[in-house]
Length: 180
Image (cartoon, rainbow, N blue to C red; front, side, top):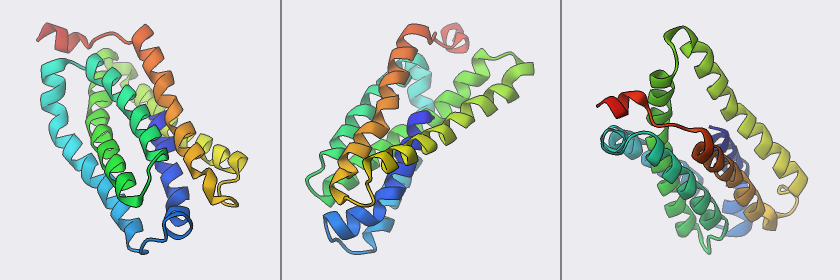
């Protein structure tokens, strides 16, 4: 959620820069970028259940983290708006898969009495990710210099590597999946 918050706000901050400063594409393309991400999110949400039923919770989570980092770097290296649009749509699919996956995982590994507080704690990381991205944008002075947008996208994807490392070390498979 930390990575998702950082990625979402990073793109919100970059919409104007990418459309008017970097590629000079049509103003309507800002909406197309958002549509690609949320369209991907919709598709990912549809396929999340079958994926997690077939492969568990841990394995898709770890693969997701690798792919989020890779897509973040690919987005930063985008040579044109169309490539960025494609990488962001793929990112949306991953978020769509992960959202139900993490909710299921929290529900399955947390005692009933502690689920509410755990959901609040996990949800807080989205906001922390947004704050980190805003901080990075100000440090990189992205608004003043359109060329630094690539650095922001790379830095916004770094929490995925942290989540991958922590997930490999501490995350266990869902007991419900193992029982089934």
